[in-house]
Structures are given as structure tokens and as C-alpha cells.
Length: 87
Image (cartoon, rainbow, N blue to C red):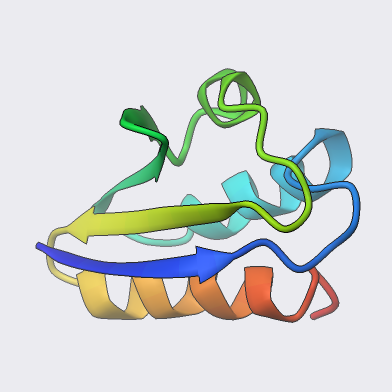
């Protein structure tokens, strides 16, 4: 298992459009991926799960992955969040 903490950089957080980009990126990887916020963990490949966390701009989250490409998955998603979803 590999994990990293990251602060959400975009102002609106992980809602609607940014969440969709996040889910699409997560689905590019084979590993199981989760997002944690305040003791809640959801499947990072589930739009409803990610939206249910209510992640706002400036919030800190943890991204965890377990599988053959776990480091690439976590690092790719962290980079997406750190750039404010501007790929």
C-alpha cells in the first residue's frame, strides 16, 4: 500500500467537473485507490463516493492505492490535485 497527503488547490474543491476529471484519472490505473478525508474513506473510482466527502478548496485529503501501479496511481492523482486540475 502506498499513500500521500495532499492539499486541494482549486478554489471549488472536488465537486462536479474536477471530481469527474479525478475519477477518470483514477480509472486509468489497475490498483485499488481510495480517498480519505476526516476518517472517511471512499473508492476513488466512484463519483458518488468522492462527491460524498464534500472536499472543498484548501482541504487536506489522503490518497491511498494498493496494487501493481500503486505509486504511479497516487503520484498521478496528487499531481492532478496540486496543479488545480490543469493538465
